[in-house]
Length: 91
Image (cartoon, rainbow, N blue to C red; front, top):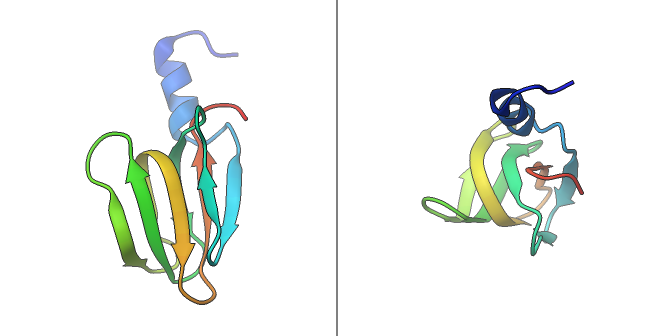
């Protein structure tokens, strides 16, 4: 049971709201649901639109890379790329 804003922030940062599996050439865009982290499952070219800070365009990420932030869109490109995009809000 969450009791404080700090507890809620921890749950948010740990991706407890679920994730979206994305593979090559698939886009996940949420109008009201944002993503809080992107974990690369394979070597992947990632494009993401950041709500705060810089966005990335076709950045090569190695398997195991985790990008933390607040994203409104994530796109996976290339061949064989796959990521888990963790939801910042409950779906």
